[in-house]
Image 1: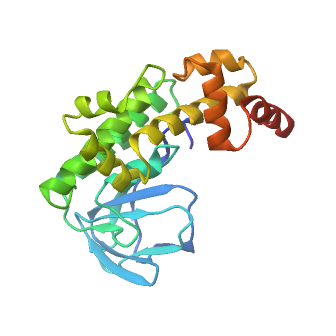
Image 2: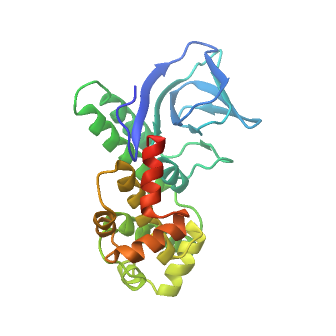
Length: 268
């Protein structure tokens, strides 16, 4: 059951003791799906790669990817799972140890992952607060994966952290004045290092990231049809409506008013 829409939400969660040979697929999911094996054995097949898994292993199903998994005939597995999606889902998954060519974690903090997923599953329900509880548990689970799964050298991690920390600051302060100098000071690095970090992580400069994120927030407000261009300009951190209009057209290829009209015609 879907509990909400937005940046990140739980699509489904469950716990299952499979019967011998129980299988799902081949087929595709429209969301991310993580299984953690509590006991027993089974097999997971994706992109012609075959993984034989057992208790303590964890595997990730990517959206729109053909997969097959099935329980062992002699020791069928028991697992707990969580399915999720949302605007933040892809970016968060990218920061975990999972990757499209590495969808399996073998013996990766099994006790902690079992606890986090079982706690998430225990909050599943239809009460008014359950959706909020599930989302909170999901953030905690993904945060654990990110925090404990960082690879690479210390220098590589520092550069990645630098860009991600600055990006998070932009996302939570985009309506306020932000300069690249302020961002560099916030993450305790030089402007040149911050620039290199953003180019590596996001393929754009810090300045372009700020502008493009503000424009995306402006699109959300414009599509509602409830606010003037000046109100939206002020709301997303542009003090000058004319500069906002020029920046918007440079990024989106049409003016804010034309974008709003397009949204109205398309029923967005």
